[in-house]
Image (cartoon, rainbow, N blue to C red):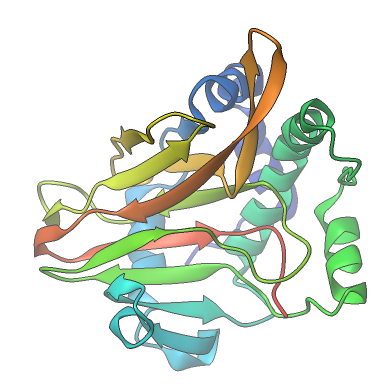
Length: 241
């Protein structure tokens, strides 16, 4: 894998219209970052999956009732490009996360730099890295869930589709559900192509109502794969216990 410098990765992430992406996050609870990775970068990340030296643990979803499929959590140090993306994306998402907390009446504020936030996580005993690589085959799916690993959680995360729909797999759509107070759940199916990323709410987000902001609860998952193989790179900004 090519190993761009942190400055290169910062520049890559900075080229997007983050004001528009923040507006999408506010309106829908998710925002698509198109072509964040090249096809070659996607294929190189996916090819890491069988190589255990990059990972700290391996989870088979069916054993835990999480769905069908499997994933591996990366170990520290992260691959250079993944580490750079985690740092650069956090910087762009932290202002939106702080605004959300202010609107929800949550006093937690997130520092501008990801390394400073990781320091807070590690001081609280959340020291294990959470970026992960997921693999699905025919019939596999990921049940609706939230990626919470301790008391501390950054409220936005990112998933990058490494496979090409229609060529590498069919089915397997990214799904987000939102539960608003005293209302039926709302489902959002997010269309992605290879290399596209989706930023989305981990747990809660604020919604503007007629009487001010109120808190809604979100879960995400992947629908059943009809055929082929699907790989996804997940970037979670808080570490785990």
